[in-house]
Image (cartoon, rainbow over all chains, first blue to last red):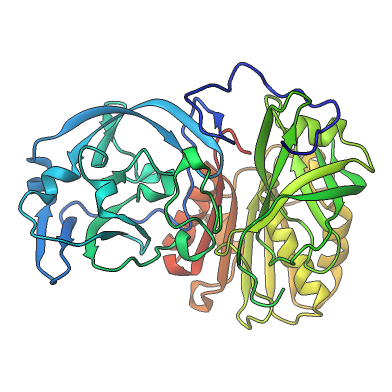
Length: 199
Length: 249
């Protein structure tokens, strides 16, 4: 337990089993990005998975939207401490995108329009744990929240859920992404409060 | 402090409040003595943790307002429905301990050794990390051209009023422009209202200069300003942003 802050009571009734340590609940949907929101032309949009041998599988926007999708409801946790419960998304499971990809890679690096990257073990993208989402709350995903499509990996801090995602590189070795190179935790499990290096 | 991003483990430190300064009716600067503070770069922030007697705790992030080397200063904007900011701005006393860890964030930072011109655009309390950059330039006797465009609602919400006036009057390459969005002081001759395309273009260097640009404020402000800069011809990779969610921190 930390040093007691004399007279501090806090806002009670909001802590609970569904909030990871150090998080607080929000009802709105804050935005966090390192740069301007990229301008993406759907006619040029492409999503590609490249395996460790360099083989590439890609989808145009029409091809991607023709894939079977899922509507899913998940809790999301941002490293800046807000959590939002029961968020409603629609997107394509990464499992579906990986169906015809031949790989024995252990790691993935997600890449975004605008240059953002984030890394995670490949297994954290599989078995129903991750999606490339294009709808939020029944509406097309807004650009500031990562539209036209973003990765959603709800069991990790939300910076792993790359906005404006344009592809996934499968790799034999782990390579730190953007925030992971700038002091944020390499894995980012909110339940173990892995916010920063060394947590 | 040289080359500081974040190295090694960020442990919680027991800071002591050695000064409190009201910056506006709803914002207060905490002056902190932090034992073995590793130093920071302007633009970085810290996490502050409050703990109640029964062990309940709450954390929030706050931008550092001070230049590296001096005592650590955080300027906290009180949010009406906030959990942590009302305590920090109303109940914290001089001499109190305060737990924090940092510095955090290696992206939205200005490195004083950089030689390129700098453009800072802040909305509301988004000016706080930009103030750290202004102060760092000053502390280093910097000659790099730096422009601060600071948008605030009204005279009452203006932070760092006297210091900005003083710094802006020196003819050393720092230029400060204020934009009032609701109400300006008496005698103010510039237009009052949100920072639109024409006003922004008038207050910022030509796109050809491609200054290192830092935009900080509420999400809507940052989205709008960053988009307008790109329309003006700024390259997206020259613009670093830091957004406060609608709830802020």
